[in-house]
Image 1 (cartoon, helix red, strand yellow):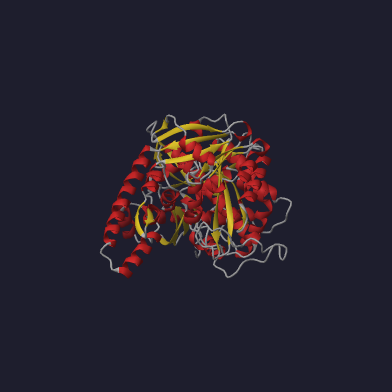
Image 2 (cartoon, rainbow, N blue to C red; image 1 turned 90 degrees about the horizontal axis):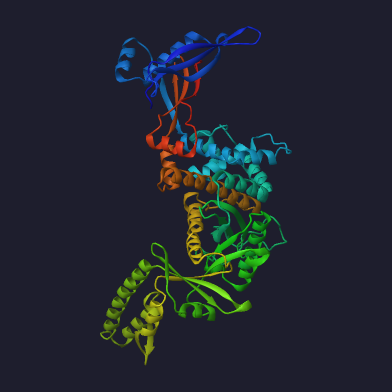
Length: 571
């Protein structure tokens, strides 16, 4: 708790145009100005007009605060005089929600929601309910049912002291109706606020599964139950129904837009919709970067429609003639970044012309060779041990080695005896520390192609944040519209925390994860006190790191006192 002594009640007055004078009662304390060296009054709380305030009750309240918060000597002195200190009742985290709310308002998210819903009559504050669910994802992820209790008992949310779960569900339905338009408005505001470069977007998909038996009905049976389908699972759970989630982010890792598809949606369908949606936003020249999972001729042609371009990863072992030609083409590498060397390769002519960039990382190349050397050494020991195995055990050992996920790819059978396939080893050595990129944009330098693709890691980091920090799964909803709304809430939470990270990293010159920032902010608590003279809501003193975060984000620190009530009342 902060120590504030020598607080006092003061009266200030204001003269109206008609000549009348209005007096106001304030709680203040003196603080020395670092520039002038002279003390100046700091107003901690304003109680309102003089005629409406019980001055004696206020003096008793200030005395109680001083007795509780003052140094040990003051406490002993006041106790000797028979005074009763304030009783500490509880405290709740304040800093995280305070920062998120300021970013929420500064980015215009709350205003966009209120504006979109102004024609609809809601009795409950929909915008605050949506913010509560977004803040919960960022600070203490839980089910919507748990959010009701979290708001009421475990956090200080600006503008919201209580909310019912039914209001949360109605707010989710309202949020989904805003959908694409809201995402576009929010992104435009964020792009302007952070001065983002949006000429290069990174896109990827992930999946999230449901712990249920069976799938949703086929499309057409019930339009509200068509998302949860079985398909290719990136979570390695093909036995469970899932949905596919797409995410586009900028080179700074700021999420641009999200999509939700049924779990069995084909890649080409996803790419076509993503391209169409982003073109509709009129972002200008957009080069979409996708990983190797999206590289098919249909997908790449789709990405080029409407004047768009792509950077795509190619599988080195795909066996495509163009890939083999690119790998075998001689030429020197150009160093463009520490541990990044590139070589531009053109394969074919005319309509068959394809532009590749072969990227090599010398550090990764050395690591790959060292790892393989250890594998081959261990494999040689295993092969020597086979000679000592009896007949049946020998056959089992051979089968085990051939089926081994690591050793098996280096083996071949020669007259029924396993041996190391040196041709396979040489073929793999050829690919050490390398990856191959293909692009349709001839205006991008080879270095920009390589470094741009490396930024695809920002999408992977965003997915990790969605799944781990924001706890996208488990999803407690059955209705498709609620599932989509849940993903949209997670997207909004990701937008807020990535915006906070980018600003803090830019101003402080150091990388901070959101869990680190969240931990520091949540240490700022709002304390609830009660005494004979009334009740007090006061926050803890800001730490040095908290002040740095507030300054980097351009957020004012919360007021020292949130509420002072000279009337005694139950908390």
